[in-house]
Amino acid sequence: MELNEILTNIANELPEKVIFSKPGKAAKYKKLCITKQGKAYMSEAFTEKQAFHKGVESSGLADSLIEAGRDYKQINAWSSGKEHIILISKKGHMSYKRKSASGPVSTNTGHDRKKRYLIEEGSDVPPLVDMGIFTKEGKVVRPMYDKFRQINRFLELINDEIKNRNYDAAEKVV
Image (cartoon, rainbow, N blue to C red):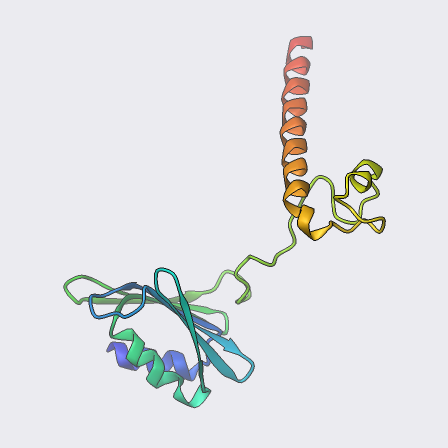
């Protein structure tokens, strides 16, 4: 199978996300991501310091993938429970793998996931309210979020040390 044929097949599956990485010499951008947004797609092209966004219609997806595919050595695409992996060597040899995705395809980059802290937001901690880190409703005051994270990290260190000391004390008793 040729690269253009594989990319056309991927486009016909209407993928959730396609990432072009490992740019060749002719590539204008370091990385290119095409993400499904409703019925259309959003293309994000990354340079060292900037990101450029452009809309792509579903009908023009195959052409966009083929055009971008010429300049990159690695292409990953996720569609309907499948992951497509295309690798192109320095000598131009292509390898293509298609495997089942290990879970539902998510376009979530992980930056907006819920963080897990020892003191959860919404907790009633009067000293943190007095310090101005929490509001009376238990919400973190936005400018104090770094301090909230710092306090939680400090508590994690203390918690780990207490666990280690309790473990050491239990060993000495035995």
